[in-house]
Image (cartoon, rainbow, N blue to C red; front, side):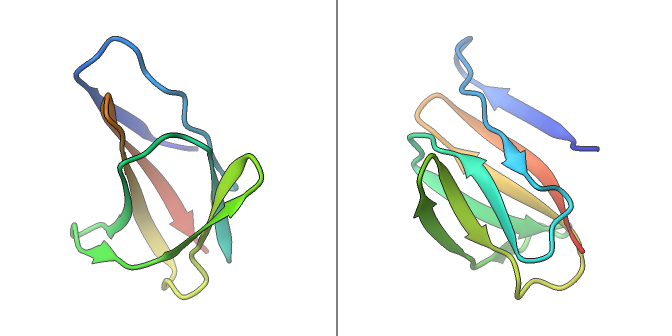
Length: 88
């Protein structure tokens, strides 16, 4: 089950979908106008990942991450969204 926490400064929220969750190699997120996308581990350490443009989605390579829980942090002009995902 996905945990989704949204911190926002605006009543308008962009809907962000992250799938599949859990995943082995790649996760996808809906295409949004973002300022910053990063992944952190459960200790808050930023993890460098590759993000590719894949049609209507952004494809994020998580194949080199170790098995565990991570957080995808997406900052837009309106808000910051934090989505939990599992690397299996």
